[in-house]
Length: 508
Image (cartoon, rainbow, N blue to C red; front, side, top):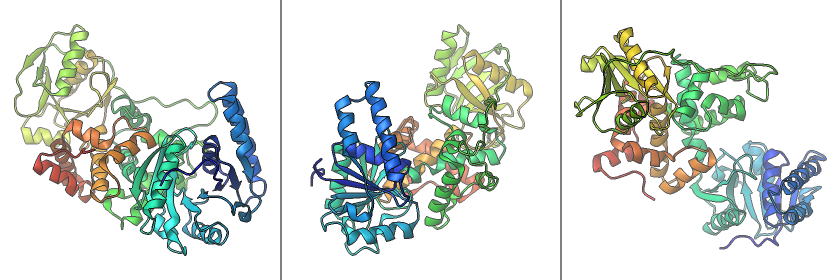
């Protein structure tokens, strides 16, 4: 089936931020739009806000003035559900409660025409569960927009057990016609984005709970080294700690309390204390007027070591060589020594983390002066490098390693020695969850990467990142993390299969 014709009226139920955003998108695409909310005057108020927004966009020449006028004229406030009888598509964006959604769709079935499509914007409730009470559940599908709906391109099109192929295809084509990038997914807890993104929050929060580093340094590392747009602390403060915690808890319980989804006690403490983030004035950070923005903890300047040797031809070794050469620093190059070392600075030996702690690796290699470095999205352009030293490592070796990295133009973020460090640990878990999501038939490999790029602005899709690192390396990191922590980090069967067969995970 093709997209809905623009002449077909679209209804949006729920005049909050998300509902209003969806209504604006549909009106901009040329549909007559009817916005309904149970709160008296809420729909009219939302339309007034959208009118101002559209007029402001036209004034700034970001949209055509005639298009803005047509969109404003297309927006109508509905006084009751009965006003939606002639609509060809109804999208609900109400409270995230199953009973409220099933009650709404049950009422709509006796109002709208038999061929009217029904869509839920739920972010976490299974579409199958919402449709179970309907007489005709085949015409219900998920149409999950991301906030703010007018700006963010991704829409997850979700099929429940009873959703017909025709319904899913029409919703997909309609979202595309509205200028969005739709991806198809099977109904599962969290769908694609809210499921696969759990490790980005979960691993950062666990690192904080282990006192590996502070919140400002965690966020800085994931931005400046990992290439993420925001770190988990500032992002959850923006989302709302209560909202993020609720989604994490929902996914965890829906997956029968699987260890990898276990919610954070630290985040729950913030919620219990009313520190919900920006909306309450405090979360991980203080947003009250006049509060100073927290700075990351970075190492003090150290002298460049007298002797520097780079080993092998790994991306990190090549990047350090390129950066040192650009800075005019003299160094030697040696063949790979077979133990994974990247560099030697005086007596310090520098390795890329493989999921073991620096302390364990120093013990295993019988090299006390062991220092670990983290995964970087692009070690040539990264501005920061986390550093973890073994407990056996002499302070002089830590200073030499720090001096090498600083000579290469990198700010150094010392962290407590924990398995997997920060970026590597986070990315390995994102890869594992994405691979398992595809393996369970929730979506395609291409769609999981597309969803994470567009839905949460990741610098790389998880499976593309796996292709860059190598499935074997990701598996090694996870296996070492599993040894240290337990089942939370168990590599999924799809990742193991990729490693054993030597075939890539990232198949379009």
